Image (cartoon, rainbow, N blue to C red):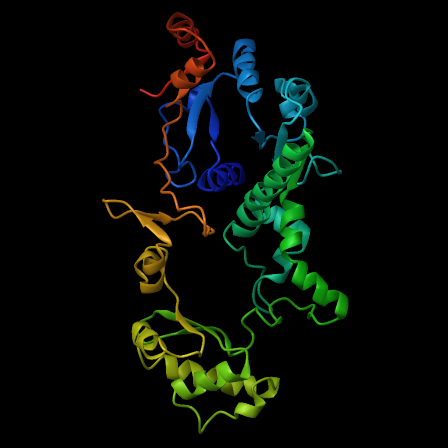
Length: 366
């Protein structure tokens, strides 16, 4: 489940000691090299009473447990939050689901697209007269899911450290994606948000807030909403004599604006426009592919991406802190890479550890 590994990655990036519990059957299988970075891995059979007992011992030493099961599954496995807090009262239990722990849809299967559909997000995405457009799985799985779970867990830890009392964090992707739409729902209350999909101010319908194709097939993003930025855009395109700056927000001029902007951008390749607008406040940016972004001069100067010796890039930890030096996350471990080390930390001797491996209760990466 993407949101839970993402939450673990974020917490690890921020300095938490994160231990991932893998199933023994996952040992030897590949992991996502970015989402799994910076943590340790313990492979155990949770259908075994001995395996459950080992994980309970680990939980007793933890501040946080995060799970992504459907409601009721953790309880059936022996990890009900109240049971865990009977021996670890400060424990914060983060519970990641699509529809939440309660409600008529709580047990329903779904994915990012379903949760966005239910929360009103998907219905606002896309162009007029066309079907709603899924935004990858960023708004449900990661923004409204894993990131919201991380925020909730951190808030729970702060309270537990102050009060000595843990609690559950019910992080549902329908809740989180709805929360990300706070601005839109606020504008709906005021009557400022159009009900037709693809006609809102940030949907691309306005010619000064959209994308344009360039001569080489590349694209630029234009976000010149404010008059001073619009003026810089028009000047940079050489259209000062053709565009009425005072009628920027007049919808009756938008077709003409769009036609002239499109023709101008189509006359030069993407990187030429990037060069021309590099020192301008016209809010014109080349649309970079994921494999191009790490080479962007600004992002490279900020070390927004980490690049390994083989040239593979991944997003660096964020945000930045003034007093905490940035850390380079350790590479993602194979499932079960730290099983023996964790068992040793629990006080088991070599003979006991060997028996657990032999009986299939735990497993280690080769």
